[in-house]
Image (cartoon, rainbow, N blue to C red; front, side, top):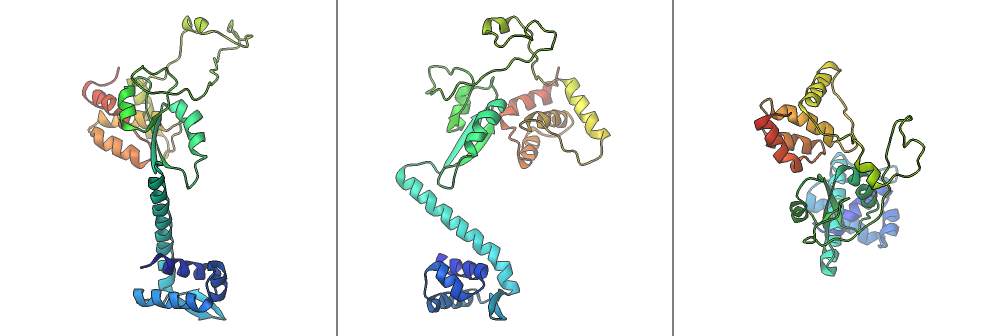
Amino acid sequence: MEEKLLRAFVTVAEVGTVSGAAIRLDLVQSALSRQLQRLQRELRLPLFARVAGRLELTTAGEAFLPVAREVLVAHRRAEQAARALASGRLTDVAVAAPGTTLIDVVLPFVATFGEEDPRPRVAETQLDDSLLDAVARHDLVVMPTVPPPSVASLPLMDLPVWAYVAPGHPWAGRTRVSLDDLVAQPVVAPAINAADVAAFQNLLKSVPQPVLAYCRTGTRCSLLWGYHQVQNGASVAEVIAAAQQAGVNLSNFEARLQDAQQNGLA
């Protein structure tokens, strides 16, 4: 089935007349009519019925229209991919970054991608994960740390880091603090322990279902749920697959989930 036949069908369905569709497609009306007739012969289906001087879709035509549109989109993507391959450009790009960097740096950049740009696949990694492993699995890894000499790297930008303190803290009146000052201060770290998992599970049980849990990347809530699941009979693979269906990639936490399954949490 030729692409031009599907395009003729979709255009006539959108415009409602052969004459109007012919103008849009820059075809003579007779040529467009022949394309519609040929498509209907190939499909062995009547796609249009004439009502009050306009062509309206039949039941078969209404069912076939979204399929035709999907094929046209796939055809356009195939052409774009072919052009990209011919020019040496990427068709897909896999990007990984820690949660905060993902939200503040990577996603705003990915949001600017157009149809001619590579299709992005974004995953979250952790600062303590192996950078070499992350680089091996992705085309681009964005990290807020200095990489080892064995990894080719390029500085992207300088971002401000904010220190939040209580109103009565000695730094409350400052406009800047140095790294030397920060070294001596206690830091609140978002580590997950057994108490966190139990509290999250109790909360899930106590509120009406379904539950919409929110965090900046979805990863923390998914991990709280996942740790409980692997400690109560679920396999690590099942947990990762369920999270993936919800749009959260936990594959980088496979080792931690396995450790929690075997040894529990502190």
